[in-house]
Length: 148
Image (cartoon, rainbow, N blue to C red):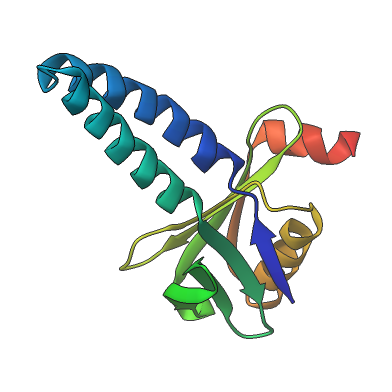
């Protein structure tokens, strides 16, 4: 089953970074209104392109597949096998949202924040139990689970 990751944090962060860059570039580069318009156009174009990235997680019985795609073309695909996983940390992100980090032994971590539903986190916990992986659950995450 494949689960989509909601890009709302990415869009919010791009808005903040874009505003900051607009002010910085506008003050440093713009000698005229044309340069200010050009700087604004570049920042907005980059923000729009980055906001088109889509993140997904596919949970299979013996592998986790993490994908980053851009307009239906897979840009990055990571297959994470149970042997590569050091531990899975479950934590709370925001008031009502679950999150997880898959800590890998020799490669970069896979951060799963704001999946569109809470069901994949339960499947990820079951995946870790089946394969005997170390699981770390924060106190705030347990509070969220007991409230849901």
